[in-house]
Image (cartoon, rainbow, N blue to C red; front, side):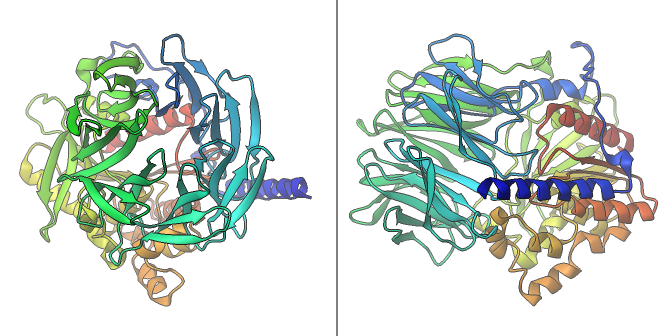
Amino acid sequence: MFKRNLILVFIGFFFTNFLQAAEWPYPQDTPEFEALDVGLAGDSPVDISRYLLANGPLSAAMSADGKYIAYSTRITGRRQLWILSVSGGQARQLTFGNGISFFRWHPDSQTLLYGADNNGDEREAYYSISTDGLKETSVLTSSNAFREFGAFNQQGTQFTYASTERNGRDFDLYVHDLTSNRSKMIYQAKFGFFPDAWRPGTNQILVTQTRGEDANNLYILDTESSDMVTIFKPKIAAAYEDMYWLKDGSGFYFTANQNGEMKQIQFYDVKSAETKVIAAADFDLENVILCAEDRYLVWTENQNGFYQLHLLDKKSNTRQQLNLRPGTYSLSCSKSGQLAVKINGPDTPGELVKINLKNFTQQSLLKANMAGIDAKSINFPQVVNFASRDGIQLQGMLYLPEKVGTALPPVVIDIHGGPTAQSKASWQPLAQYLTGKGVAVLDINVRGSTGFGKTYARLDNQEKRLDSVRDLVDALAWLKADGRVDASRAAAIGGSYGGYMVNAVMGAYPDAFAAGASFVGVADWVKALQGASPGLKASDLIEYGDIREAKWQTFYAENSPINTVNKIKAPMFFQHGVNDPRDPVTESDMMVKALRKKNIDVTYLRFEDEGHSISKLENRVIFYRKLATFLEQHL
């Protein structure tokens, strides 16, 4: 019966997507394969495909025994799992399917668990694979449910996860037993509850409850009795992240901003229920881990999108900063005191560095393949700050091309998704390509972005939504006054929430931008919020308001981009995946149809084998080439 239901779910899902594709009246919008002709390495400017082919690890983690580093990379064109011996040798590819979505080390350091979905639908199946790649088993088969992995217990016999299996909306909590290969619901939830770190030597796990886009509540749950005890549920919502238990289970380190604007490192003692601050700064502290049997506490400090690496030796109570190449870092470590750092920066799509915490020596384990791009041509961003018309300080990363002649360069304002995310000092293929072509890029952090305090992150909530749209126009005014770019030749681009921002600003301020490019963006907030994937519904309640209420239905019926689409004058570019579970493809379809009725110049890429992001290399090449051509043509 179970297999039959799975088949029916699959047939229904396939048939729905087939109808979506078949009903679209513009077959030219379905992209066709393009040959990967990247030109000569010495060409100037380099073809944008080379910036996509430059690759390194996307995510990485060291095994507990310190022998291996597992990492994901798109070097084959799909996001696959690879493994590298810390002692040296050639990296080995472990997975060969349609691409993975995440991976975790098993506590035995001999096995990895990974997830994979179907062409971006985000409905993951779980698999287990040995480090030699010879043993691979199905752990949780695919279904119509969304899942979120939690953590293994100390023995590695069980792991936790959240799933919408029960009703398609609420994330209930489950424990999966690897011996019997059976799952058991341990907590029936409402909206967004997610398992986190497992307390060593016990049946207890930490659980977070989503409270808007940038905050959560924290609980401890007994997996046997299902008893839930509140740890943190403050009156003013705060973020609790990066929980890491001491090996004896007496307490855990974490980051939180309940004491102020920025995230601090704190410690919670279970017996006394007391909390103390371990480290604080003027910036967010993140990525907390414990290394070498609890001796070293390691974390990052997010200074305007550039990370700094810090370490506290708990034995000697000494603290120091470890210097690495500029960018952003993710951390993992072994019991023996080896720290693995995955670096992503303006000049690298990924590098793996090992640091011996006993003497702080560094060793590069895996460097990025730069696909023949000259390192001297890489452009580093400048951090810029400027005021909006209502006095809010905005921030961004400004990429400026080399000045050629007296003409000022045109500019692209790139808006991140989220909205609670941050533009950081990371590898940006489009920004590097455009600056090579003489176009400036401003990666902007409008109000609502993270990294600048929790008040700033909430300045766009609910009725304040359109204030962040206005920030884009204020950024243009600042760029004009600054005088380094030609603000009269500007384009707005963005994906996900950034796609909504483009849709909104192009209609609300039709004379501001010369062109707009929206990727997987919202057009009609009422439909988008009513049909949002379960992973978004819990956070949407605070960020946008409860769309079940008439008040918010009225508000978004009046303040959605589809209502100002007829005011758009400039050429537009759209991209959407048919399998997108977050923003349905119909959101972009609505915008495209309305603009074509007005005879506005529209380019649309409607990928039938993608979801909310573009995962396949061939599709990424098509997308970036078309986008680059569009921007060059209209700027």
